[in-house]
Length: 317
Image 1: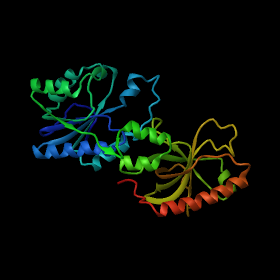
Image 2 (image 1 turned 45 degrees about the horizontal axis):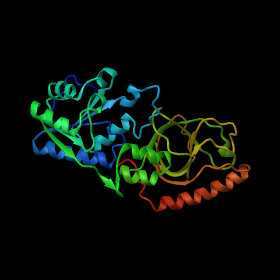
Image 3 (image 1 turned 60 degrees about the vertical axis):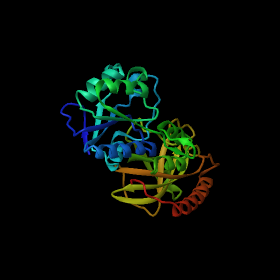
Image 4 (image 1 turned 90 degrees about the vertical axis):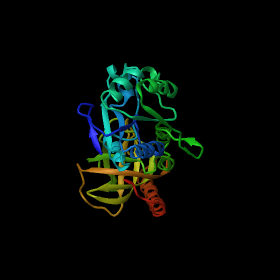
């Protein structure tokens, strides 16, 4: 896959293009991408996924947006490459670009600068300023500008129309099992191991304190999770707590991400890790003291080991 950071110098053979943020590259996206690739192959062309950076909402309403993303740009790029896309266009999203009508965008960018032959759209996709470019409007414009339009219907799982918004909502509830079903892979967080307060070592549960590398990355709900953790090209079973650690930090005002890695005794401070979420065990609780906390952590470890033994732990497929 060729990644283009802007439109200058773009060249592709008979481009078949789809457009969107594709946050998460979930199974609904994959349905569109599979059709995109099939159509491109059928006309001896190349598939092009046109996406934006930064996310449009972060530009249009930066002061009011609390948007958190399922995938960072790097994560999204890796997923799209695995999906077999020929070209990924990462177009700089600005307020000036947002002001373009759908007619201007299609004619000036997709047709004149990219040479688009076929536009592939999802069932509810809209283009241009104020989202005025409906499927019906795009069809009318295609007759004038001589390009084809193909519409891909929604993917339903358990009678749910899969979307990035639905997946974000599920993550905010800690429903990582449901998220895995919708994404087609386990939700991941990439971060760096930072120095913590070392209290876990005092109760025989040392933890890696993990700081995320992207401020816009969504963090699942507070609680205890069964996870796998990749570091130094190796994958380990682990349990992870997201929360304010109420038993230890009575005045905490921010959430921490702490992983206890099983059968592990290495110094990984400052190193990059990838966390894969497989199952939520319980809510975060406040205990009467460290002894009660230690007792609960022992039971959590037993539960996590049992759960992970029953699951497909693949994460980066």
